[in-house]
Length: 325
Length: 123
Image (cartoon, rainbow over all chains, first blue to last red; front, side, top):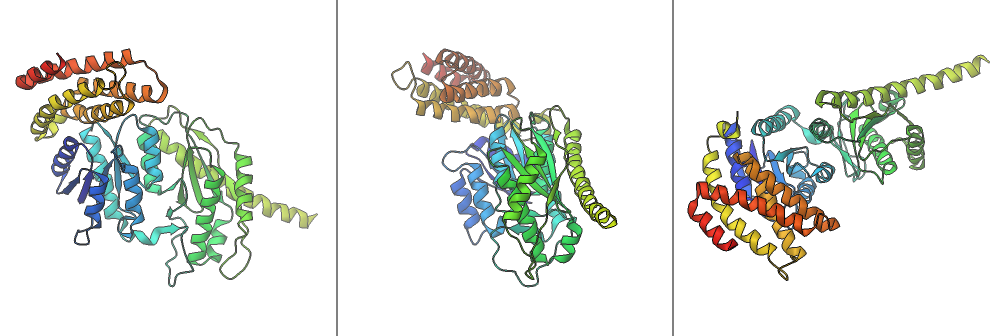
């Protein structure tokens, strides 16, 4: 991989360069500041980087701001960005993920851990191919021509919605944090009811709008909390909220549904698009080990999908009962 | 297996780290002594925090865990002090003293000339 490491400490840069070369045939460039990094990546003669390692705490422009700047460029919208952070920087880590980071490593480095994170990033690059097809953005204009419709069960990255991050990054966030400090975090999911039918009726662009608007509604309803959300595919969203937040999921679901209703959405052919989400069961993540943390995420996802199916079925049964009566 | 066993070039980087440690220690000393000599300026404490942050970030990887942890303690003290006023300056000075002692021991062990210089600055 071609990697750019950015840190204001020359010792860290030297260590990172030495480590990465030891791990494999990586081509490593270094920058001592965010400004220098932007100069390097902005150079039209410069080849693309496959991965970035950014120190969070740097003077003037910090690593989080740099991460955000890189994500604003079309060249690096999906490139793995690993943040380098001291172990005590939990709040910074959350902000870094919100800004588009995909993973993080802690200083001082555990060499085996760094190797694992780099290998994960490498596997991600090797496995993804045409990444840009899987990005949904709020800042969409009119319906693009010949847009490829993503598979219903495929996780996609939603850009430009506060707190919404890539699914791969979300997995990294949960599995990494569970080693140290997921104290008080709660994970829960929402699933769009009747998603298969909505998917069938939607164009590629329409489905993108449906998912992005739902993400916006959930994000708006979680404002005031420290949270991260991801779209896991199949109309399901997973949220992790910090700080001992105990959600009243029924109330929150009503708020999200009201928010979606107020958006006054329509299919591309002009038909009214009216849909609702259903909540799964909230899972507390205190004292969960690494594997169990991901189990909690899976459970939150699963219960949301089950609840969406149950409520759809209940609604259908209700109409059948009404008709029979 | 330690990082030193896993990384062949670590001895060279560690030598560079130790080479920079004397200067960093002197810089810390003058930052903490800034202001009226009793209460350091907040800006100077911020700069001191940045130096300690760097040391804390790299020392552990280079096999200098105690030094790294002592630097991290001082960094956290300063962060708390600048945010809340606690812990008081005596605790910060005390922890900085412990850190400086570890740093001087390391310099004396690995770079006796730099250690003498650092001690002369402290004196």
